Image (tube, rainbow over all chains, first blue to last red; front, side, top):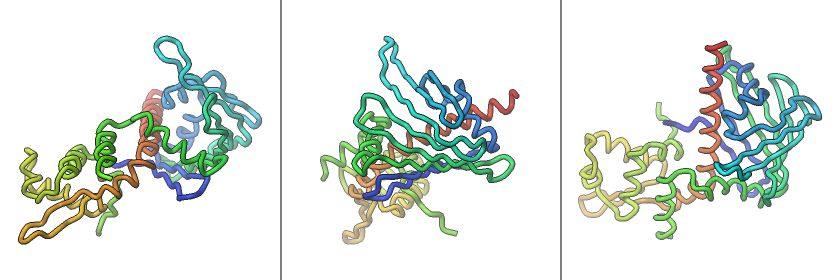
Length: 155
Length: 107
């Protein structure tokens, strides 16, 4: 099971690139970013607002079983070119991560495949590095954490 | 053609993670590693080869035996940084792809 998402985050830079090829026609890939009910499904969060147009805004919110808000994010859309490009800001509320600028480029590869390049620019190198550590702090992968424990004892 | 080995690919496999866990506590020969698994010896050798190619395992000669040693620096490099982040996005994008494939077929 190879990971199909490539992350390029060079040391000491305040940006990163996420790229991924999809077995989907370009139009379907783009649709997954535009339709609120589809965004909800793959992002795993509730979409309160999503105005997919220039100067539009969006708001995401996730609540736990008790109805407490555990994740809230928002942003505005600067450029919206169907099947080509979305430029937007993204900010997680009540966190120290700051605002990030996201440039999403969608490209047709064949009739049935497409590619997404996501260029993310953070406020500073420190902000970027904090965000990169975030999923690690949440302990996404148990086996991986176990290894990390061993590594930290060794070094 | 030689495939490029990337570290994410290496640790995506449960058997290879198990091998790393084993060797992390103590250097071992391929035979001793293989004895811990029900899997056929050549399969384990292949896994060891992949881990070696991406520098997660290092080889040490001791007399006539070759011992495999875990390279924590390599693991640290990816563990602390990109792996969980990449996995998070990979999971999301896999979901996106599955949803849209279904969407296509019901359209």
